[in-house]
Amino acid sequence: MLGLALDLLIAALVIGVALWTVRTRDDFAAIVGFVAYGLLLTLAWARLAAYDVALTEAAIGGGVTGVILLRASIRLKPVVTVRKPISARILVGLLCAAISAGLSAVVLLPMTPAPSLATEVRAHLAGTGLGNPIAGVLMAYRALDTFLETVVVLLALFGVWSLTPDAAWGGRPVMAGPTAAFGPLPLFGRVLIPVGIVIGIYIVWVGADAPGGKFQGATILAAMWILAMMAGLTKAPPIGRWRLRLLLAAGPIVFVAVGLAGIPLAGAFLAYPEALAKPLILLIEVALTLSIAATLGLLVAGPPETASGAEP
Amino acid sequence: MTAIIALFSTMAIGAGIIFFLAGTVGLIRFPDALTRLHALTKADNLGLGLIVLGLLPLSSSLGMALKLLVIWVLVQFAGATVAQLIARVARSTERGE
Image 1 (cartoon, rainbow over the protein chains, first blue to last red):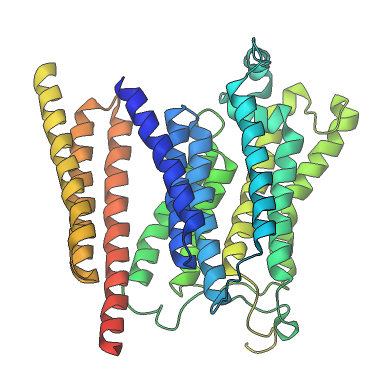
Image 2 (spheres, rainbow over the protein chains, first blue to last red; image 1 turned 120 degrees about the vertical axis):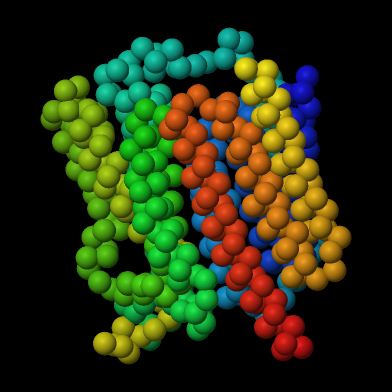
């Protein structure tokens, strides 16, 4: 009974905050609403016992996306919002309503028995060397989806970089404000970053057997890098540096290489030979963690602003 | 013994919730940024501290208890830093006007 009341409260809050975020006219308020919405969704996923999804939502949905939106909104100011004509708004409203109706139909009118491969996954989990069924699905059965997700993050970074002015191409993004070197932020960075790096690696490692994994851990690592850049402890790297580009591409490259090797060795693209499954998955996870962390950090840093030759 | 532990946990968590409630009321009711910040940091420090204190005897292992303590210390540290940063901005905008 108490549980049901809590669930209803969370659901009402999620919908309420979502409506408020859409309705509000102020960019900053809308972004704060979006972050709060992400944290409430985290609670909802935790109530559904989907702790992997809850962690990802908190780290990426609420955390990194919120920071990216904030930095984007600072760049956009001053912005003039023009209300679209009434016909366009009605059309958008109808399309959104159709999507909502379709999704509700899927959730409320499920097939009985629901089609599920969960028992199959459980039965064959030992073959992957992983203890967490979510990690098993992501790395073994749906490896192609996971691969494409990481490529999408990289494509998003290309989108951000394409906003670079010609003069700044190959230069550094600017993260730290002019007063960053004073006050509490550098101290906070010096103390927190070593702790955060350990926690990030722990989250990646524990993901094999418990909730956690590369996306969540990489987000924490990226956050530590962002903190270092914001506190003025380090500068964002020039985006033209080839070592940086190699780091960004390392994850997808290793994933594709292992996937192609699977064709002769295990009979299919992205299939792992049984004996080597665990080490190969570990190799991919490490490479992907580094690439995702670097990509997320640079996504937050934004397009370069200083010319590549303007500094030593 | 278990009854005493349960009583202690309930009281500590209850007291923590009261601090969060008071902090939230302060955040909504207080007149300016600095006093609102003051109300909020009390909720973070004492409220979360009491909830963690109440959860400690219920944790299943030493590792779990340590994780709870680490969470409290990290939130304290982050909260104190962010409060300082916001207070600086609030003060400099006050002077500017």
